[in-house]
Image 1: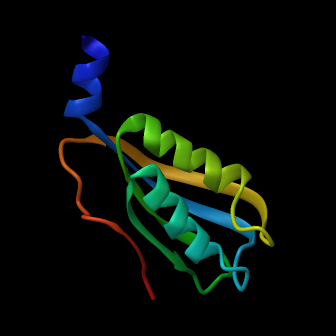
Image 2 (image 1 turned 120 degrees about the vertical axis):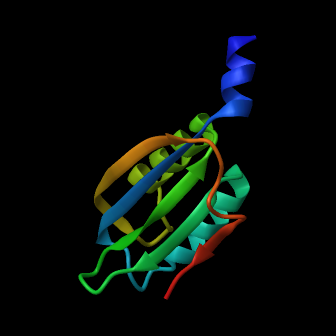
Image 3 (image 1 turned 135 degrees about the horizontal axis):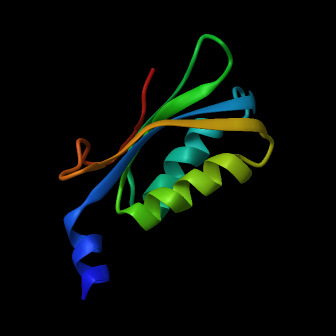
Length: 103
């Protein structure tokens, strides 16, 4: 019962930044695709310093799956050196209705 209540009640939000060869390798497109597949919401964008950053929100287990993907998988021709996560917190409602690429 408690597992069900947690899954339906609270969401998790986390900011991320991915370092490595993540621009010019369709990283944002694959991130958007993976987020939709997992059912999380948020956004992704390139930064001027050659990284990719964004925010993911959703049920904790889905956010954790997305964090794992951002750390280990990425797009086929990307190279992830490291991924940093910040502002991880529990939220009561989602701030986004889908997952988008920002410019």
